[in-house]
Amino acid sequence: MKKLLCFCVLFLLSINVPNAHSAEYSIEMLNKREDGQKMVYSQDIINIDVNDTVKWTPTSKGHNVEFITVPGSMDIPKKSKTSKEYSYTFDQPGVYLYQCTPHKSMGMIALVIVGKDTTNINEISASKVVGMSKKKLAKLIESIDS
Ligand SMILES: [Cu+2]
Image (cartoon, rainbow, N blue to C red; front, side):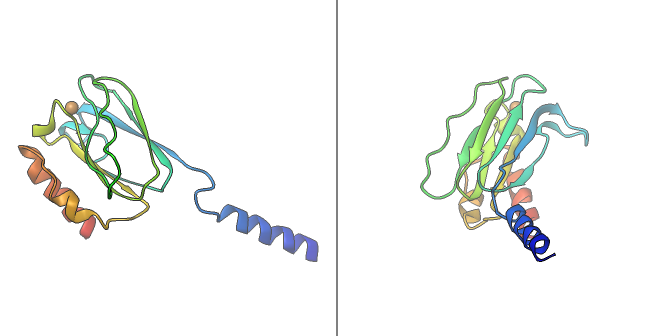
């Protein structure tokens, strides 16, 4: 009985180790989303853990992923090729802002929040976005705060 209890405790401990398994999430690049929004990613904000991967799929053609603001002093990842699948593994916590280069003025921007860390939100909010993306960015940031 004691042995069984010990096994159970070990088992519970083992499944609670953070980042024991990193996950992969999928985001689609779309001309039109189910909610009627045009030129959008399937998710405006995605919350993931450190070391998780996001894979962007070119469900509609003509889109890409270009990071604008990333946490701290890390380098901005290279922008992806238009109409190609793209994956990125987020090993640094914080908020990441990205846009679609061809539709950056049409509000085609989105956020990745890694490890629930929003300490760089002021840099995100000061990011240079254009056209309809200005309003959208403000809206996205507002939705994080609430
Ligand atoms: Cu686009």
